[in-house]
Picture 1 (cartoon, rainbow, N blue to C red):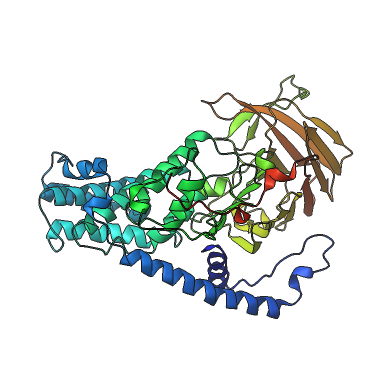
Picture 2: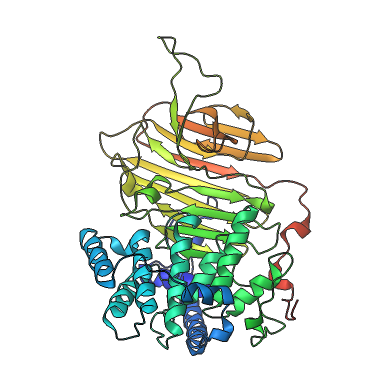
Length: 510
């Protein structure tokens, strides 16, 4: 219910109203009828804002009780051990850490320490209004307030899930004392959707189980109808919890939105539906103060019909091109292969900078967006990556690059594939066709490109092979443009991309 509103809010905050480049052959279609489209979006914004406010009011009206909380969590609260320090010492040490770290609100270790201090204060018998309780709660409120408006945090699932679970427990723990300041933050209203969107069509079973377990934990703070739908429709077998007995989903309750744009995590997470054979896409931007996001800015992961095509590796690695010829010294040079499907200018890594995602269209059957990563390479005046896709169709990626005066360099495009063995490559300098299995990708540039493929492990600890295609400029053009077309597979059964929105939600206990 938040999806359209989420997108509209971001567009209104950013001052972006469906502007930008057009898909090839559209003759500027995206820039037609702007006033009409903007008016429609504003109307939808008002409608969705009312829906979100109503949902938030229902969440705030819900009061957790000890009867609604699992006995294991109650026992955990009751048995919270002292860390071996007095409250005064624990507070002074934490205050010193916060003073030394200007970015402490985004530091998971400090957030965990704040939760621990709050638990220690409660364990010592403190109540709302007592000094150490209030100090710890004030810090936690700041951490929540600077988090993403929609519950998001940059980084992989395992990096932020334990922190957010601690925040959920702290909100629940304080609510049991009659203190609802943390519980009623809108952060917790959006956290279930952010969590759900981590599950892509090709996510492994461990990720699905971790997300479901986390949602069960969140439901103790508020038995969200969206969480109930998830538990009764996604896990197999379905899960029914006693605390949902008072929450009856209407027969026409729609599934939670299967996509979202998360600006403070610099990511779009999209899937066409919650069906097992859905299409999925993830693309990354970058945050100016987060070096890890800068390394993967522009990355695209594409999973049509739950079968991955463009994938993400775990870390950069050294690799040798298959069939590479030795140089004049008889040596074969290794290349640094990024973990993501990104570009590199010369041998340079991206520098810290902002790479915003500009969403023009996002719904359950198509998408249209731009990643503006121009800040990341000082040699470039422009690097725009435009994406166009639709359910059951092809994905188009258009890279547009211009160099600052006197800073031309050879530029490489890296594409990390799901293939685990060398792929077929046909190239005529400006056009390249890559094929493996039922997959085909066509690259077409406006300047000659040399093509190499590498077979590299996912990471130093995961030897699973992945094929990486590198397209590299032969000369140093003043600008270049590359069209990448990931073609749809043939003979895909229609039922594999069934629309879950047309399937009635389960309403009974299981």
